[in-house]
View 1: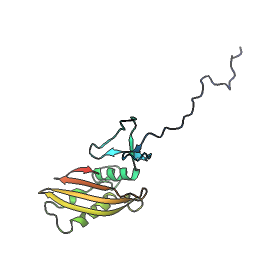
View 2: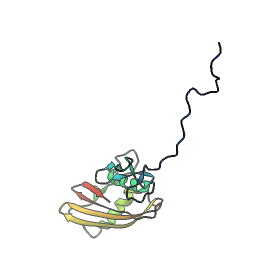
View 3: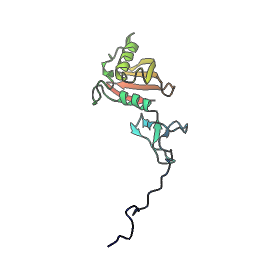
View 4: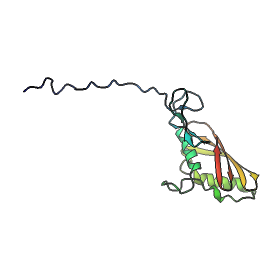
Length: 163
């Protein structure tokens, strides 16, 4: 008995190849650039969707890595020495060496990114209450050439981040 088709014919037509629409991971700042990582809102700690197209907003992967390292407690992940150790800062007294202490802790936290991906540019620590301080630092993202500033407050060891 012969088959009604040859073995080289397809039973199902091949799908049409479509170019990507490049609307996923558009820069959350509105530049229109396609970015390399999903944008994580520092306030909600969640990915953010673009209301106009339903796709995820994007951000630079190095910036995302900095936020991940800051939001992770030191040695709490499978990556050795990843995360912040900011609870080592001495409160309630902020002395003359607090900025240097913070710089040392930032290098410990972000050590896997320095010097290949970022350079820490400026650090400022201000006491805003008896057991609270505001920490602000600027770093140079070597891949993008931009210098984001990250500010957060820590109150009794609980941190909240913003950008």
